[in-house]
Image (cartoon, rainbow, N blue to C red; front, side, top):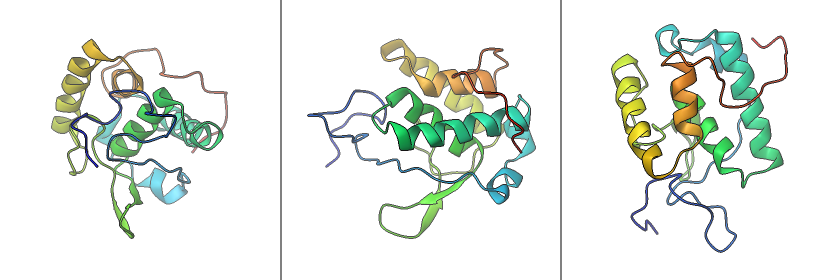
Length: 152
């Protein structure tokens, strides 16, 4: 049931992990997914972005109740234009993490999403804004510390 809250606005209710009307499951960051990341969607290196994305997918398996990592994960998927499993079966594009747009991420939408995340952060700061500030707006601070690897 949709209770009117936007995804990632609040903590789990009664100990159940539910992001309002969205459930995030973990996905494998494949070579195909990495190759599909539009070049214009990132203002950080692809390798740095992929390392972060792989880390948050792993963190989702280890601790699915980590809401900050869930916000980072959703944002990475959207920026990468990833295909994710639909809750009704099959596949769909990752949705924009704040506005819930179901369109491919591109420069203008990323700017709009960053603005929406900044407004949302006034109420509830989190991983979505930190990821957009790092991957798009040029912040030198990654949303999470990523161990050094040869991501690709």
